[in-house]
Length: 317
Image 1 (tube, rainbow, N blue to C red):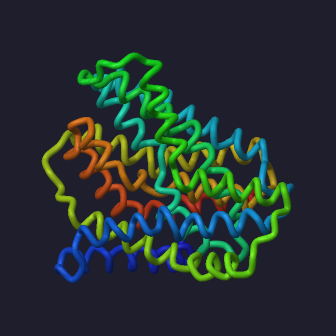
Image 2 (cartoon, rainbow, N blue to C red; image 1 turned 180 degrees about the horizontal axis):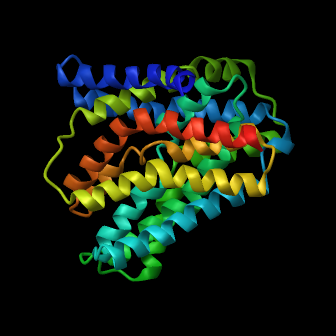
Image 3 (cartoon, rainbow, N blue to C red; image 1 turned 90 degrees about the horizontal axis):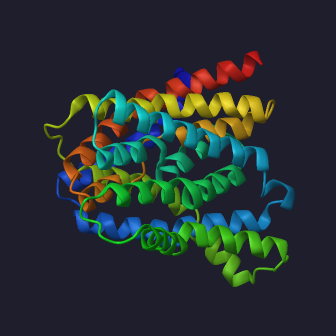
């Protein structure tokens, strides 16, 4: 536990620095938003393209890993939505929004840095495959459900699905995965100038992404909200999601320690970075912003705990 905490603590220290800089006015919230776009559109795509083009083809597509993450997310989505609707009597839109908080992790801004710090040779292919499942399956389902239950939505189901697919097709991380995989398959050689540019951009992704998370949280204030649904959402995201991932990976990919730890890391991190923004779209910003802040603070303890449990589980197997 202490070893894992020593790995995770520097990550949260950078998050805290971002938080402190914005709270003290050293850096504006607008500047942090611009830095976030830099990470999403330049730094992380550079990491993904460069890494995927250099990996052996056999590591780019692992059906059992993809299935494990898909089943993990779908099972938590179904159970979570049912619990919120039937057990806690939440409305359809609220349940869909909370469910999204339970199953869509902040893979790019927190999961990737933790993965790099935790493992000497992290399987970046596992990170890329996780992004595929999130962007092609999990996020579209969440957005379709939220749109379906939003009373302000007057468009038909088909137009909502097309809108989600259109947004997904513009995701820079997904585009980067496609470029990296296609380039690898076709064995396209990168010109030296492009390769050097990607090499210079890639290292900045981790530190800037963490700083952006902290700066973004500085604009959030905890408000009075529905605490039991909030605590349920945070608990499922930080504890249940990674435990289900660990069990399914142990079943579908026994002995694959690195990939298992990668998926546990990804599922153990707080909800995706734009959760508060999505909440604002559906007039639920107070709940989503509070949940995001609480989950990020709690993850300083929960991530080491989940990783320690995963290490113990894998060691005994």
